Structure formats: structure tokens, C-alpha cells
Length: 383
Image (cartoon, rainbow, N blue to C red; front, side, top):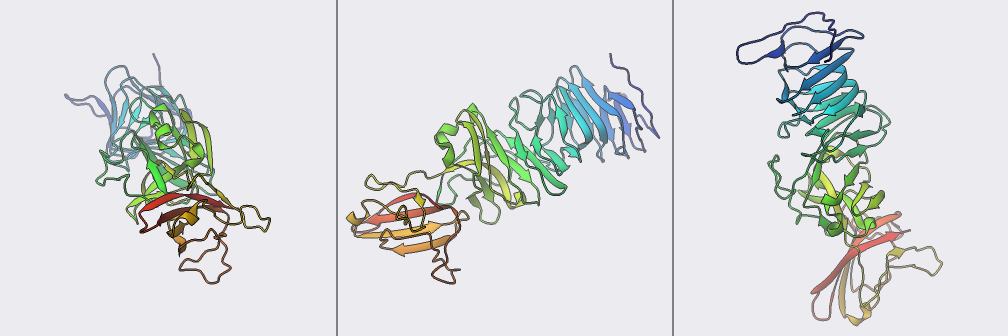
């Protein structure tokens, strides 16, 4: 049985016939080395956000609930509620959080309600049965591994070290993005950039924040990565663009693991520009009549100088369109002659020597003898 010593500045405790709860509508402050254990629900309608010491939330059977008009904030927090801690208002932690038993549940349809790590991001004890089922936020300049999941499934999302203190808020959804339950919008996996091949129908994440960042997403066996792409190099982080109302490529700067368990890291993007993010893939084959060519290296060594489709001369008509990673056309030509060397001829081109930077580009090649009724899609890397 835990014994706690409370050092309050001013405290009000309310108990009525229907509910036993700790209700604050005044001004409470816990000082250095203070400890408090909540074996009842907490209702905070006052000031309870300038606390040092330790606060624990406990329950052996019923759901423990935090509610009220204002967010309570504690230094060190322990959660030992077998049937979970429900947040109807946000809870702040400034130092350490320990998961002992149960999850922290936040309402997914009320995004500002979250468990908030404030200028610190240390926690212990997270696993499939102990995590944040809903939204959590971080205000920090450190790497942060979001201890988030859905039901009995921990699925972390990671933001890296930042050059200043920034705010991110996020949650994981084990749901089909075509039919989400807590969003007013549907995120059709058929609406996508032309070079995106597959998009997960099993899960997605919501990441909010105004600061440009990379992000790392994780997968497990239930993610069915094999059906997105059996080759990890073809995986991409993809996001539903608010501006374009479609899925766009957010890149892949690193992948680790295998198709049953691993992680993928995106290029830099601004989270607030995307409703949700998940894992997808790009077209992986650029084969025509048995030929393939993934690399263009126009450096004068007579090797991979241009993008070549073997067998293209068998067709009288063709059209080649090349896009950058944002879906902008950088080169378009009818009757392509296997001579493209990584030069942009898009609308913004100022000169014929406008060579494109190193990176991955995507193409559509349409071809046919009478009409352009066949096509292949793929990618090419300029080095």
C-alpha cells in the first residue's frame, strides 16, 4: 500500500453522493519532494499546473478518469490503472512518466486532448498493453519516440533531434485510411501521384506540427508490408496533401529491418500540410522487351549516360513524361529516342543546360504502334 505526503498551497476536495473524486476549483501547488496518489477520479477546474514531486494514478478495477476545464501538470507521473487512465482533458508531464499497468486513452475525435511531454521526453515501461491509445504531444528539441498505439498494439513514430524547441502532436490508427472512423474526410488510396503504386490499407498516423522535419514510421507483421512492396528500397512514406487532396510521396532516406518488422524514414516535410501519413510504395519495374535501366549518370564515361528502354524502337509512337518527387513535370517528349540525360525541360526551365539535381525521379512511358494504349511506370535515379 503506497503512502503519500501532499504539500499543497491551497486545495479543495469535492465529494458527492454519486461520485467520489478529487475536484479542484482553486489553486494547488505541489512543492519539491511532494507526492500524491490519486485513487479516485480527478476533476481540475482550477490551477494545478505548477507542480514538483510525484503524482500517481491508481485503480484495480474501474477506469480512472481525468477531466475538467484545465490541464493538470506534474513533474513525475506513474500510471498503475489496470483498466486504463482516460483523459477527458489533457495531462502534462515535465519529467518522467512510468507505465506500470494500463494504457492512457485520449479521445481521438478531440485532437487538442492529449498526454503532453513538456520540455522533457523520458518514459519507461511502454509495450503492447501499456502505451498511449490516442494523441500525445511533445515540446522539446530532442529525438522523441511517440509511445503510441491502437488497442493492444504499440506502434511508435519517431521525430529526430531539432535545432530548436518545437511542438509535435501525434497518434496511431490501426484503420483503413479509405474508411477512417474519427475523420470527416475519406483518404482514398486511389487518389495518388502517378508514380505511387501501393498505399497501406491497414494503418496510418496523424502527425501535427508547423516545423519541417523528417519522421520515422514503424511496421510489424500485421502491417502486411509484403503486399505494399517486397523490396524495401521501393517503400515510401506517403501523406494525404491538404492542398492537393491526394496522396503524395514524402520520400525514403532510410529503411531498416525486413518485411515482417522494420522502419522507414521520410524526407523533410511540414506535418501541418498533410492530414495523415502512412507507408506506400513506388513503381519498381521499368522493363520493356526485357530491358531495364534504373540509373542515369551523365558524366561522360559512356556508361548509363541516358535513360534507355530496350526494345523501344519496335513501337512507332511513344510519349515520355518525367516527374520530380513533388509530382511536377520536369521533362515531356513525344517519340522519345532514348536520349534523356537528366536535363529539365519543364515550364520553369530557363536554359537548355538546366541539369536536374541528384535524386529519384519518376516516369510514365506510353507507347503503341497505332495509339498510345500501353504504358509503364517507374523511377530513375540521377547520379
